[in-house]
Image (cartoon, rainbow, N blue to C red; front, side, top):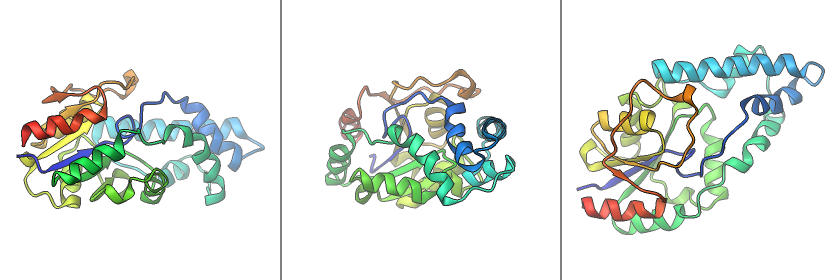
Length: 230
């Protein structure tokens, strides 16, 4: 019996958006170093590329502050507003999410979130609150607060602990990535549901591909899968 469903965030609870990573970091560089934008962009992009390579290959986590520090930049909250504004169009929650979470909760299912992210918790909670779903999440784990990223088993264990789920076999994980999400959650003993609409860049693919227990083509279908397992 599945009594807990834990979701990935980007590409799962939010529809996939292809991001120009140089433009991402240039938005911050322009705010921090307006007199030397391209050099600052180069430094930020190099730091971020290494962080995500470490997450992919060694499952080590990092933070937004770590990236800025490695790039040799002192970034204030005012500076980060430009960066967050760049990302804002890609952060909107899928319209299926609130009705799905309400239905799962009505079924007695606990709801969790586990995201590979360098962003602080507050940024994510502001997004969920803006989109009217924060109150439906029983527990969330952001890898910026952990030593590990998905697919490390300890990241999934932390997510289960956050929602009070002791038995991995009673949990399902929903994600868009066959390595981080499906392979990782499966190895952690959880059932897995794949949402296969994201265009994962080749340099973000890991060393293994997981075999999902179920495949859905929109989030609204997750409830039927879970009910079938109950």
